[in-house]
Length: 169
Ligand code: FEO
Image (tube, rainbow, N blue to C red; front, side, top):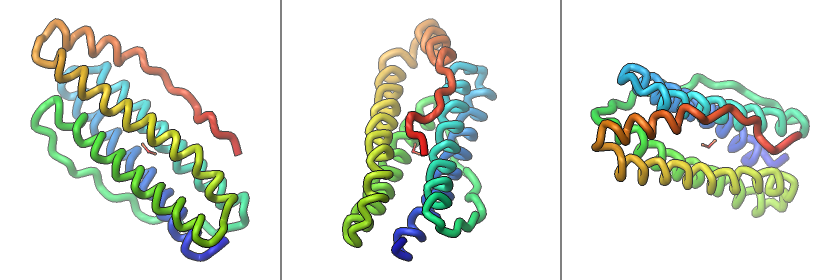
């Protein structure tokens, strides 16, 4: 594998674990607010991010690439409103999309079609993650100011279950 691609993928493992940590911190915030549905939604999101990290980790090992696990940054965001984690999530997912796009472009540049194909799943996944974040913001804008509606939205988010990634390596 090209050295640059290997470095970018190695970095992405760290970024995905950071995403997991960030989302667990959001779950932590909602738990302290008594919104167990929102907390559940973000706990599941954190698990998905760990899956993303492990998929890249496995892909690198499958290709005989060395993986170096680096320190994971502290999630130190401050949330002042119930909406804050939602808007930050969307911002964060857009950032992750830009990281995946960068690796994809770099892979194409060096004719690493295998990595480009591997990343296809992540590109689609990013589309879904951005949409999920946006949908949550829309629902919160519509229903967040009314206590009864917020209660129902919280119940809806309690239903989210963990689902393993559809990509198998
Ligand atoms: Fe692993 Fe939410 O992107």
